[in-house]
Picture 1 (cartoon, rainbow, N blue to C red):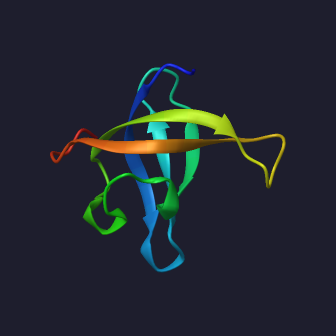
Picture 2 (spheres, rainbow, N blue to C red):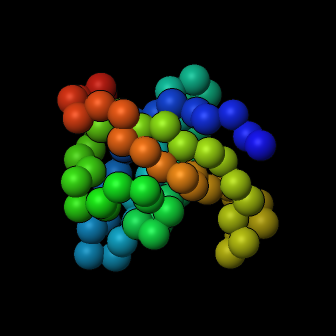
Picture 3 (spheres, rainbow, N blue to C red):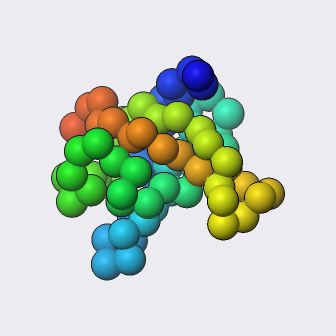
Length: 78
């Protein structure tokens, strides 16, 4: 099993149900879909701290995505 990573919400497109998380260690941006969240997508705000796992993106084999996203802090980290 992959190790959980820490990051912050960088971008959210609520009406389309997706966003991007910036990994706090590598500064890599990972795509995520609302259905990959354990909490409510609508609770997220840009700058929120999260933990997540990285998985292969079946839609694009050259990209990874964030899955099993959990909100860690409801305070701005950016």
